[in-house]
Image (cartoon, rainbow, N blue to C red; front, side, top):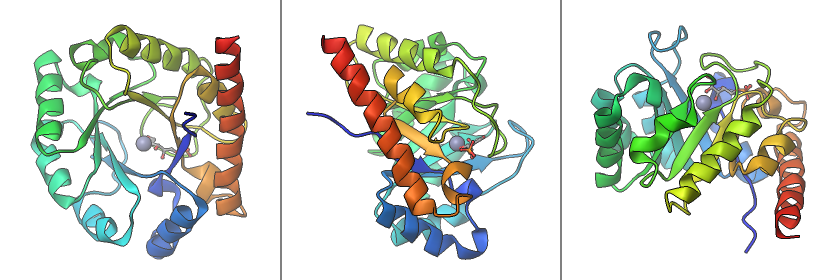
Length: 235
Ligand code: DX5
Ligand code: ZN
């Protein structure tokens, strides 16, 4: 059965003085996940949100709390975010060796949560290899991590297709692909056609004049492209 693309609005672009209203708005508009960008000022220059915010957010929403850890020491911090309510934890491949990746995924799974590995634009999909058969999701970054509102890096859709192929070759049929950075109505079709399942949207949703309508427009554009790609593949 056709699985629609899920939109994961990134709270980094929301109005922090009205965070509760913003979360209720994306939930009512049909978002699938709520994306929480955690930055530590080391892995990326920016400092954003963390455990206390997630603790307040979790009981206020039924959306999947999708935590993107842009931090140097995920193995130390994973338990904190799980305790605070993360449903899905993304760790970056660049800060973990093979053994570290295996440990991170195991730690997340032992807590009964979904595990994802995120890749910076220049990190090849082969970095997923040590855990490819166990991942619930891979996150393909289509901008350099650190800031919302950047432009989509052309060619990121090819990496999405490579990640899909790698998961299927490893017998992992369930692994979702998330794309993060510069996704809006114009770029969503490219990545959806390549096999993306979850699209992070920061500015394209929260900075739009009508954020709910913008969310739905991105989803509609993505679904049209995904359905066309699936139909093409079956022909
Ligand atoms: C960037 C973050 C993204 C970002 C997305 O480091 O991981 O989630 O907030 O924002 P947009 O959609 O505006 O590029
Ligand atoms: Zn993110």
